[in-house]
Length: 630
Picture (spheres, rainbow, N blue to C red):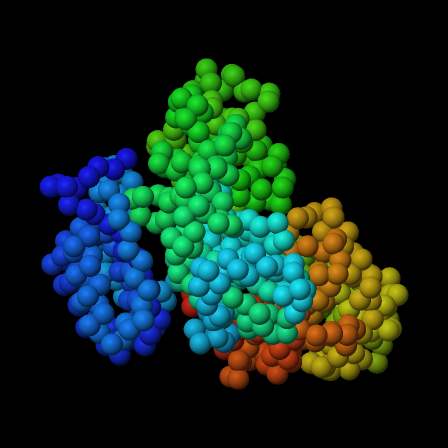
């Protein structure tokens, strides 16, 4: 893979980061570019107003000169420079993928992006978990379960890395549970933490990552979750410093994945914990650079399986993206791929094919199904949509037409009618009333007279209207007749709709069972109120399982008692202070948003009426929210 540099001069890789306020970001960027170019260093430099994150490679003498130049700035006093000697890369393909054939100096907003959407409250590095040296980290793990650990419910190790990293190496100890989130990207970590907070709360949480930077903000995020999340610690210098302190690996088993041409770094312990995607044999070498053809994530394919020829590989996350329903994914994607194969291969159609097994029969998709494969790179989110009061599934779907079109590559929306049927209401104009009765719309759109409004049955062109919550009078109503409204429209009527929650809840449990699984729930107005109760109940009911909620023009329903903060990632969309929403006030929607844990809550205010906004600025933010759950 690698060869010694020219003239036998030693080469190396340097990693470091520093969270510190940079007073003049452009000038700092110029310094790094000039210094690295003059020393012949290649790699990545990221600079933000809050600090720097650097991974560069080159001659060891040049790297040491770079360190001296950076240390001349008082801003970088105390920086942990992780310098490791290595051979110069001989595989240009690997070096190119890792960014070690050029120098990239970029100014960014964040050194690492913890969330793909803005958090309601910015995280502060000052609130990060306490740093433990490699020796201290090792000692805490070693003493877990002893009398010295009586102050905690227990100890847990939390891996802040991505699944392709944790496949080949992780901490393992008899007395400590290792929590591997199994995430595709770092920005998925907050959602995993929100969904598994019960496994973390009350424990001594020991976080670790490759070099330490990802634990900084992730540990700060953990500590925002309040009671039970006070004891959060992070491995200073990451796995790299730990392996330097414990060359035999200590409690770390396998290899440390690194983001440079070395690919991974191991200890003197040669045990392999990774396994081949296809045959399951022990294997941990990513040098072949095989990737999932859906999400492009690295996958492990052993040498024996590689000998079968080029193939299409599907990673474990894409296989299980529909919550374990592999056969459904297999059927959908196999059909696409089979149709693109030569006829002689199509005829083979091995009966025992699974995603992994099928790959042996499929050619590299060079030019085939390019657009389709790209659109499949991430499975669409399935979102259950709950309409508002006196609406129905069909009407709500029509109203969301533009909204759905703009999100068609991200999500598919499923609509259902609420279980409480409502009578048809006509609001007569004063000129329509006479001594004998009122006028009602006829099937052909003309007016039809009747001596009594109740004598007019609804026409076939009229669609039933439904509700999730009703008044006591409406709860057991089964009539499909027209009624004349006996009073003007009351915008505060939702406060009187306190009945029928249990019937609606049981209906939705059945919906999840028969039409699920769903990744999220979206509700509008009364539907948002009902969706909020699902968020509150999902931690206590295995039949209600979803990842997030989108609540539009929502409010707190009097029909349900909310206790404590709701631990569910949520996006709240409602009219702001200059909104034209005359039905649900901003204060009512804001009150609902405040029932959710602010650490995983996003609020999006708009200037329109009682609608779901579709302007580009709002859609962009909605996309950012949804993408974290893919």
